[in-house]
Image (cartoon, rainbow, N blue to C red; front, side):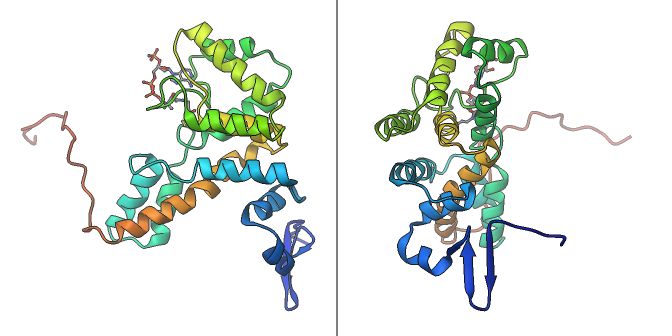
Length: 244
Ligand SMILES: CC(C)(COP(=O)(O)OP(=O)(O)OC[C@H]1O[C@@H](n2cnc3c(N)ncnc32)[C@H](O)[C@@H]1OP(=O)(O)O)[C@@H](O)C(=O)NCCC(=O)NCCS
């Protein structure tokens, strides 16, 4: 057999997801619960469901100015169809926007027994940015990160990775003298690590969360005049050169 999967199957009698009948899931389980089932292979409990749902809501949309939304709307404004706009938005999700969940979860999970001070020292020495810290507009605290950590505490989910993520924030301030708060990606990374998600699904979780926001913005963009232009830019190159 060339292809093998333990995730799902369908045949003329119906479909199964991780062993459960899809029609049963449709009637009794939420979208969030079924996403957890797909990714972890078992159904979540009530606390895990609430937590994952809060994570999705935290990242569903964050205004028109962010890369995933401007990229999507710009693509559609050029005359491309909705699916091209969605793809453009998702393609802009990288290590600095949304995708930092993956890097931060990897850092936490692969340095489980390394003290926060040592983790920060390694990044500082290599002049690398620590994924999950700092924000364009939230300079002292990212309210989404704080809320997620509060929910994780209340649900009894916050454990060693949430503690470590906050220790790293304090170490960053101590070692760089820069206020680089734990951002929403960093908080999600810590929480999903405490929930036993593999760091390799980090970007996937952000994509799942942000896609509804992208679709809503594309729907709105459909009523705008075509072809977005960037008008507040400066040409900083040479002018008036003569061809040889
Ligand atoms: C999000 C981010 C792009 C915002 O950047 P910004 O507020 O525009 O800050 P700047 O790029 O101007 O950086 C200011 C200084 O802080 C440093 N810095 C910023 N984020 C840092 C981080 N996560 N770790 C270490 N240093 C960081 C920069 O190197 C720069 O140092 P310098 O002044 O000595 O050159 C940036 O904090 C970052 O790259 N964070 C890591 C990626 C991440 O978590 N992204 C998810 C955002 S929700």
